[in-house]
Amino acid sequence: MIDFTLLSIFIPTFFMVSITPGMCMTLAMSLGITIGVRKTFWMMYGELLGVATVAVASVLGIATLMTALPQLFQGFKIMGALYLLYVGINMWRAKGKLSTDPNQHQQSIKRRSLFQQGFLTAIANPKGWAFMISLLPPFINQTLPLTPQLSILVIVILISEFICMTLYATGGKSIAKVLTKRNNVQLLNKISGSLMVLVAIWLVAS
Image (cartoon, rainbow, N blue to C red; front, side, top):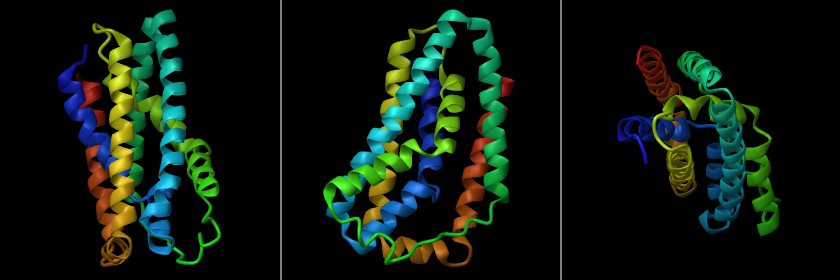
């Protein structure tokens, strides 16, 4: 049903992608500071629905590609590995500034507004689409059934996103202080970028 070797590499890879400060993580932290963790969960529910939508849409495209053009899928897999390499290099070179404004989200207190905010943040992020489309194919074993593999990968993505957003929301000010002290955001980017590069090299070589 699932290639456990690929899964064991995918889990830490995507976790490092999730934990690195970005739009959703910074939003979760800002809301956690300004309106509290309980209300922030509503933004997180919307974000998870958005991520699931992007992941499922990407999965359907990948499934169609695998069924119709299996040889093209191999090329797509290599392109995915090269994209990971590109992301890794950019993360390594990024300055990694963390931007939070304690007053930025004070108005988004209603549950529906928070939910919509999280959903739209995930859906409207072009990097999220590009990353999902490029990240999933390299971790699919063509000799095994497609549906169980993709289902498990999507579940891993959602669990990873939820854990990381919860950490940012609950950590709040403490995480902000740690990340903004001595360029720790830049260090985290370099660690994550190095992992992306290593995984890309492994995928190309395998």
